[in-house]
Length: 111
Figure 1: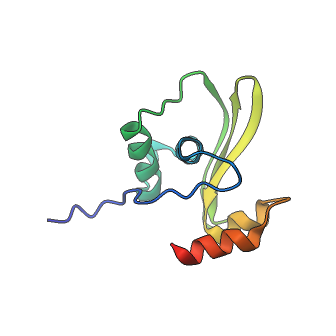
Figure 2: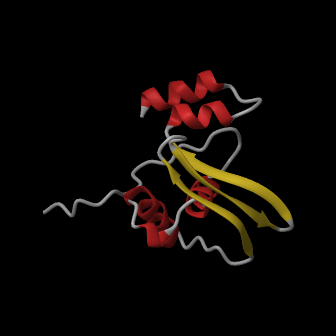
């Protein structure tokens, strides 16, 4: 029986990042109270992998913006401020600097 629920089925870390980092960053760019299916998929996967937000300071959360096609947050991890975001691949690629976006597009097509 189907549950009509999104889940994370495959994680493809790029550019030296780990599977745990990919899920952590997606988790940090998610808000459970929004009840967004993609947010909940990241939150549930983080819980399944025992990834926690402990020690991470949420400085700013930006919920899903349909015009920008993404959501994001500014967080402090070990004293370093970083911006995490998730959204449509083509939207995220525009934000990536110094990355081989061709290989990212190839990975997207493989999946």
